Amino acid sequence: MTVTKTQSGDTVTLLVEGRVDTVTSPNLEKEIQAVSDVNALVLDLAKLDYISSAGLRVLLSAHKSFVKKGGLTITHVADAIMDIFDVTGFKDILTIK
Image (cartoon, rainbow, N blue to C red; front, side):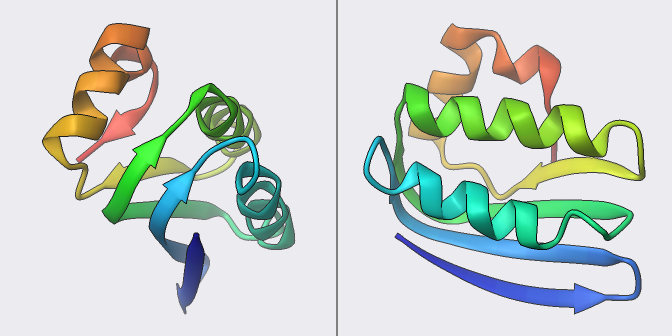
């Protein structure tokens, strides 16, 4: 998994590539914690191939942290990942564009 960070004003976008699983989810969590001082976070999942329950836990934690601020937005979700969000109910919790 690789994460590419860009910032525009008080919003940070993290482009997540590869797989977010038990091994890589702690790295994503660290990347998100490193930008916790910004108002809003965008996770661009255009290049995400797979997400496990460990990755979903990281997304839920990020959602809880940023809902009190400007929010967390998930963008460019592939159909396979959207199916996971749908089955787990994350589609109804997260802001997905």
